[in-house]
Length: 167
Image (cartoon, rainbow, N blue to C red; front, side, top):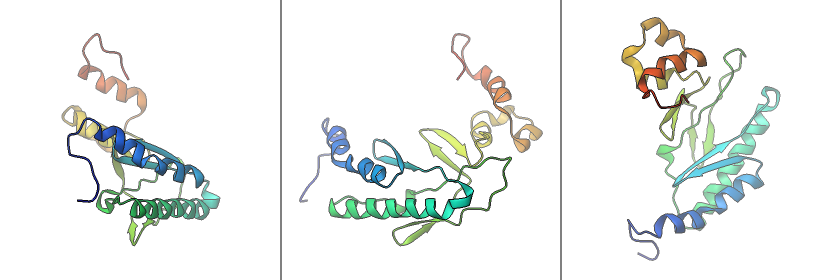
Protein backbone atom coordinates (compact mmCIF):
# COMPACT_ATOMS: atom_id res chain seq x y z
CA UNK A 1 0.00 0.00 0.00
CA UNK A 2 1.47 3.35 -1.09
CA UNK A 3 -0.85 5.60 0.90
CA UNK A 4 -3.60 5.45 3.46
CA UNK A 5 -4.55 5.57 7.10
CA UNK A 6 -5.19 2.57 9.34
CA UNK A 7 -8.91 1.84 9.68
CA UNK A 8 -10.24 3.04 13.03
CA UNK A 9 -7.52 5.64 13.47
CA UNK A 10 -8.58 8.64 15.56
CA UNK A 11 -6.97 10.96 13.00
CA UNK A 12 -8.65 9.22 10.03
CA UNK A 13 -11.88 11.28 9.86
CA UNK A 14 -10.06 14.59 10.25
CA UNK A 15 -7.44 13.74 7.65
CA UNK A 16 -10.10 12.45 5.22
CA UNK A 17 -12.09 15.67 5.65
CA UNK A 18 -9.01 17.78 4.92
CA UNK A 19 -8.00 15.55 2.02
CA UNK A 20 -11.42 15.66 0.36
CA UNK A 21 -12.19 19.34 1.06
CA UNK A 22 -11.32 20.41 -2.53
CA UNK A 23 -14.51 18.65 -3.71
CA UNK A 24 -16.49 21.53 -2.18
CA UNK A 25 -14.27 24.03 -4.02
CA UNK A 26 -14.83 22.20 -7.32
CA UNK A 27 -18.59 22.23 -6.80
CA UNK A 28 -18.57 25.92 -5.86
CA UNK A 29 -16.50 26.84 -8.91
CA UNK A 30 -19.15 25.12 -11.07
CA UNK A 31 -21.99 27.01 -9.35
CA UNK A 32 -23.26 23.90 -7.57
CA UNK A 33 -24.24 23.69 -3.88
CA UNK A 34 -22.36 20.96 -2.04
CA UNK A 35 -22.95 19.29 1.31
CA UNK A 36 -20.70 16.65 2.81
CA UNK A 37 -20.99 14.36 5.79
CA UNK A 38 -18.15 11.93 6.41
CA UNK A 39 -17.59 10.20 3.06
CA UNK A 40 -20.98 11.19 1.58
CA UNK A 41 -21.16 14.16 -0.76
CA UNK A 42 -24.37 15.68 -2.04
CA UNK A 43 -24.63 18.12 -4.91
CA UNK A 44 -27.67 20.37 -5.23
CA UNK A 45 -28.78 22.66 -8.02
CA UNK A 46 -32.00 24.62 -8.45
CA UNK A 47 -33.24 24.72 -11.98
CA UNK A 48 -35.77 26.71 -13.89
CA UNK A 49 -37.80 24.40 -16.17
CA UNK A 50 -37.11 26.71 -19.11
CA UNK A 51 -33.31 26.25 -18.86
CA UNK A 52 -33.15 22.75 -17.38
CA UNK A 53 -30.66 21.54 -20.01
CA UNK A 54 -28.17 24.24 -18.95
CA UNK A 55 -28.49 23.21 -15.30
CA UNK A 56 -28.08 19.51 -16.10
CA UNK A 57 -24.97 20.27 -18.21
CA UNK A 58 -23.56 22.34 -15.36
CA UNK A 59 -24.13 19.47 -12.92
CA UNK A 60 -22.60 16.90 -15.29
CA UNK A 61 -19.53 19.13 -15.80
CA UNK A 62 -19.15 19.43 -12.03
CA UNK A 63 -19.36 15.64 -11.68
CA UNK A 64 -16.74 15.21 -14.42
CA UNK A 65 -14.43 17.67 -12.64
CA UNK A 66 -14.90 15.85 -9.33
CA UNK A 67 -14.30 12.48 -10.97
CA UNK A 68 -11.04 13.81 -12.52
CA UNK A 69 -9.95 15.18 -9.15
CA UNK A 70 -10.65 11.86 -7.41
CA UNK A 71 -8.60 9.94 -9.98
CA UNK A 72 -5.67 12.36 -9.63
CA UNK A 73 -5.85 12.05 -5.84
CA UNK A 74 -6.21 8.27 -5.66
CA UNK A 75 -9.81 8.27 -4.46
CA UNK A 76 -12.61 6.31 -6.05
CA UNK A 77 -16.25 7.29 -6.43
CA UNK A 78 -18.64 4.46 -5.73
CA UNK A 79 -20.85 4.70 -8.84
CA UNK A 80 -23.19 2.02 -7.47
CA UNK A 81 -24.09 4.30 -4.54
CA UNK A 82 -24.65 7.38 -6.68
CA UNK A 83 -28.28 8.49 -6.65
CA UNK A 84 -30.14 11.28 -8.40
CA UNK A 85 -33.41 12.64 -7.11
CA UNK A 86 -35.28 15.34 -9.00
CA UNK A 87 -37.42 17.23 -6.49
CA UNK A 88 -40.40 19.00 -8.03
CA UNK A 89 -43.65 20.54 -6.93
CA UNK A 90 -46.61 18.22 -7.09
CA UNK A 91 -48.62 21.21 -8.34
CA UNK A 92 -46.38 21.79 -11.36
CA UNK A 93 -46.27 19.48 -14.37
CA UNK A 94 -42.70 18.76 -15.42
CA UNK A 95 -41.19 16.30 -17.81
CA UNK A 96 -39.17 13.60 -16.08
CA UNK A 97 -35.42 14.06 -15.91
CA UNK A 98 -33.72 11.65 -18.29
CA UNK A 99 -30.71 10.99 -16.08
CA UNK A 100 -27.35 12.47 -15.12
CA UNK A 101 -24.06 11.34 -16.63
CA UNK A 102 -21.50 10.26 -14.02
CA UNK A 103 -18.36 9.16 -15.83
CA UNK A 104 -19.40 6.38 -18.20
CA UNK A 105 -22.67 5.74 -16.38
CA UNK A 106 -26.07 7.36 -16.86
CA UNK A 107 -27.73 7.53 -13.43
CA UNK A 108 -31.51 7.56 -13.69
CA UNK A 109 -33.47 9.57 -11.13
CA UNK A 110 -34.97 7.63 -8.26
CA UNK A 111 -38.34 8.39 -6.69
CA UNK A 112 -36.84 8.54 -3.19
CA UNK A 113 -33.45 8.75 -1.52
CA UNK A 114 -32.16 8.44 2.03
CA UNK A 115 -30.36 11.45 3.50
CA UNK A 116 -28.89 10.93 6.99
CA UNK A 117 -31.69 8.52 7.84
CA UNK A 118 -34.53 10.60 6.39
CA UNK A 119 -36.24 9.24 3.28
CA UNK A 120 -36.95 12.08 0.85
CA UNK A 121 -39.23 11.61 -2.12
CA UNK A 122 -39.30 13.60 -5.33
CA UNK A 123 -42.19 15.80 -4.18
CA UNK A 124 -41.16 16.06 -0.51
CA UNK A 125 -44.42 14.50 0.68
CA UNK A 126 -42.57 12.37 3.27
CA UNK A 127 -44.87 9.47 2.27
CA UNK A 128 -42.04 6.90 2.12
CA UNK A 129 -40.63 8.10 5.44
CA UNK A 130 -44.04 7.74 7.06
CA UNK A 131 -44.64 4.30 5.62
CA UNK A 132 -41.21 3.17 6.85
CA UNK A 133 -41.49 4.81 10.29
CA UNK A 134 -45.13 4.42 11.26
CA UNK A 135 -46.50 2.31 8.45
CA UNK A 136 -48.51 0.08 10.72
CA UNK A 137 -50.45 3.07 12.05
CA UNK A 138 -51.42 4.52 8.67
CA UNK A 139 -54.75 3.72 7.12
CA UNK A 140 -54.52 2.55 3.48
CA UNK A 141 -56.01 5.85 2.27
CA UNK A 142 -53.46 7.90 4.24
CA UNK A 143 -50.57 5.86 2.83
CA UNK A 144 -51.77 6.10 -0.76
CA UNK A 145 -52.83 9.77 -0.77
CA UNK A 146 -49.85 11.29 1.00
CA UNK A 147 -50.24 13.58 3.96
CA UNK A 148 -49.73 17.26 4.53
CA UNK A 149 -47.21 18.51 7.08
CA UNK A 150 -49.80 19.11 9.80
CA UNK A 151 -51.10 15.56 9.69
CA UNK A 152 -47.54 14.21 9.54
CA UNK A 153 -46.80 15.94 12.82
CA UNK A 154 -49.98 14.63 14.37
CA UNK A 155 -49.28 11.11 13.09
CA UNK A 156 -45.76 11.15 14.52
CA UNK A 157 -46.75 12.70 17.84
CA UNK A 158 -47.22 9.35 19.58
CA UNK A 159 -43.64 8.34 18.64
CA UNK A 160 -42.22 11.05 20.92
CA UNK A 161 -42.16 11.10 24.69
CA UNK A 162 -44.38 13.76 26.33
CA UNK A 163 -41.32 15.96 26.98
CA UNK A 164 -39.96 15.74 23.40
CA UNK A 165 -40.53 18.72 21.15
CA UNK A 166 -42.10 18.02 17.77
CA UNK A 167 -39.83 18.41 14.80
